[in-house]
Image (tube, rainbow, N blue to C red; front, side):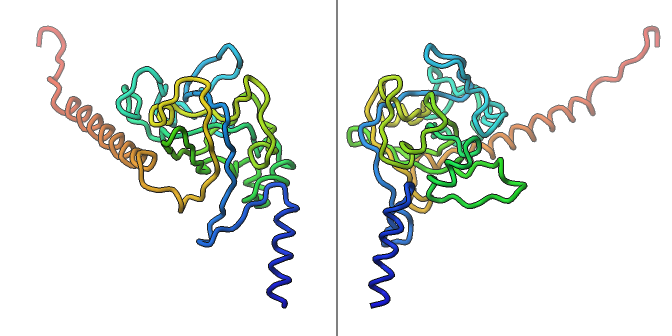
Length: 244
């Protein structure tokens, strides 16, 4: 009887919490799908657009986002899912959703399912940054990490974690990176389904492939440049004053 009452109480508690989710049999949270969401494309280093004066040189949670990524994630110059001109040192599979937990801590406390009260020193560290989402479109599936805030809003947890629908700009509610665009075959204001997933439920795929390889490549290139510069310094011909 106690076990039954405990189960009923747990179910009631989940139903009363706006950002609630159901625990799957595996022990990982099972989050609901947001279906038929208008999806737009954005990229790290992007300038202003006709519908937004904001730029993506910095993200809501990383003032050096472009520098930390390695440069402009140019959507027109790609090698596979990667930018052509440099080795990206952050995951090229990223998205933006319209809520900023750092800017709206009271809303975060109410809505974010995984919220934990931060210590004083960590209150400006996002608990949403890096969270994984699953996105599907016409039978294709991609996984990406939540790395910025948008489109257009930063204060919409009732959509991101609840059942409300976005209304602005044709109902756009998800921004995706060029890598996600290319994998899913998106072209503009496409409709996708998305949901949060636990890191342990993210399968192997290109979204897991590039980060460590890119960091290693950049480290190797930096060491090669240092070695070349040192060789040039050691073996450069001595310079003598004229007439010697």
